[in-house]
Length: 189
Ligand SMILES: Nc1ncnc2c1ncn2[C@@H]1O[C@H](COP(=O)(O)OP(=O)(O)OP(=O)(O)O)[C@@H](O)[C@H]1O
Ligand SMILES: [Mg+2]
Image (cartoon, rainbow, N blue to C red; front, side):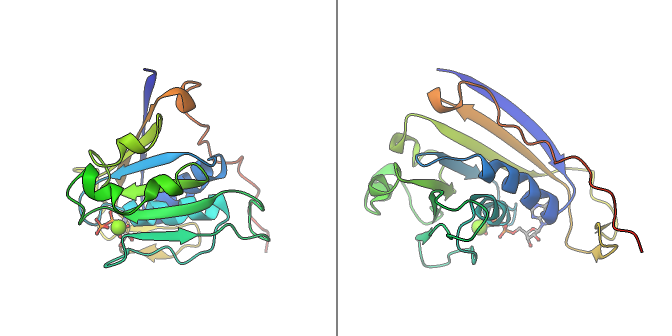
């Protein structure tokens, strides 16, 4: 089975979301993403960026009691006619058997399915998957946060290592292009 791994480090939540947005822009119906990382690693933050790239209805949040949320594609969004996003938090699900109770197989072919805490529970849903691991980048935390492109200090910003592994025929062509678009000149004053 084909497999590749791509690893990047980002310095704050906006960068995590920008990376996820570029990934989301190229995702297709039937894609399955399995998100791994400790509490607060940034799985939901990443999913918010994916939603922007997919052009689905905003409002992606950590579903505390709701296990599954469907975010429909927005006709006047960034990808009119694109797939919906099915966002799952499997933290409270113990096994693949419990995953089967929430009927993800009914939507997996027609939507992009993203599962936080899905490792070891959802692999049977599709023959290909993208595994995404978010980790706090040890020893690299800048004191007092970073300054973003608007000159705003983001006290919340911490570096994260994001590792993508593509598994199965869908990803046999290698990693998607996640390069940022060419720098546009800064607006003059
Ligand atoms: N580089 C970064 N990438 C993502 N989030 C970051 C980063 N730096 C700081 N953060 C902050 O870390 C927090 C991540 O929270 P988030 O809800 O996305 O985590 P989670 O992995 O979904 O947690 P849970 O397991 O509870 O669902 C947010 O407050 C976010 O602003
Ligand atoms: Mg979360």
